[in-house]
Image (spheres, rainbow over the protein chains, first blue to last red):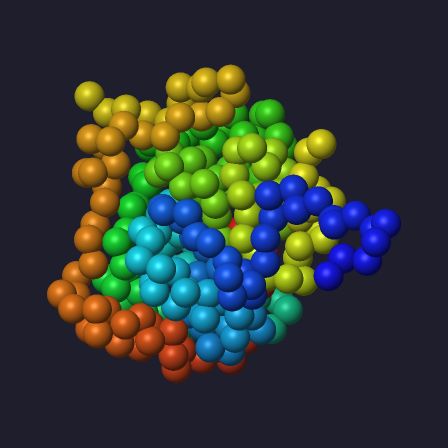
Length: 196
Length: 61
C-alpha cells in the first residue's frame, strides 16, 4: 500500500516484465535484446526473459518482429565466436576466417532455437521495406538510433502497442506511440528517458 | 498495392493494412498446444555461449 502523502511514480508507459499479472496486448513486439536473453541460457537476464516468453505463449497473443532481428541474432553469434578467440581485440579480427567455422556451428544452434520459438507462436514478420519511412521519421523526430527505429517502426506497423526489450533506447519514443516492457532494473532509466 | 507504414495521423505512423498484415502473419507450425509448449521449452533451454552477448555485439549505438 502506498504511504499517505506519497505519490505513485508515473509509469510513463514502461512496465516490468517480472510482474506476474502483466497484461499483454495482441500483438506484442519483440526486440532482439529480449530474444537473445530468452534463448541463450548463459545470458544474465535469461531467468527473467525466458519465463516472460513463456507468459507470452500462455497468453496466446501473437508476436511481431522486424526482419532485422534475424540478422542481428546472426551478428551477435558471429561476434561471440570472434570474442571467444580474440577477447577484447575481436573487432580487429572481423575478417579473420579462423572463427567462421565455430561461428557457423553456433549460428546453426541459435537459428534452430529461434525457428522453434517462432514455430510455437503466431508470428508477424515485418520486412524492412515496409517501415523505412517510419523508421527515419523516428530518428528525425525523437533521436532514435537506426536499428532501434527499425524495431519500433515494425512494432507499430504490426499494430503492436508494446515492445518487449532490455534496451533502454526505445524510451526516446513518447509513451503514446509505444509501451515498453522491460526488466525491473531498467524501469527508472526508461522512465527518465521518456519525452515529457 | 503494398501499404506502407509511412502515412501518419497526428504524428503517429499507421499500422499496415489488414491485407498486408495477413500476408506477413505466420500461424504456429506445431498443431497442438502441447507440441508448441514443448518446442518453446526446447528453444529456451540448453543454448550456452562461452562469452556474454552484449548490445554492442549486434547493434551500433
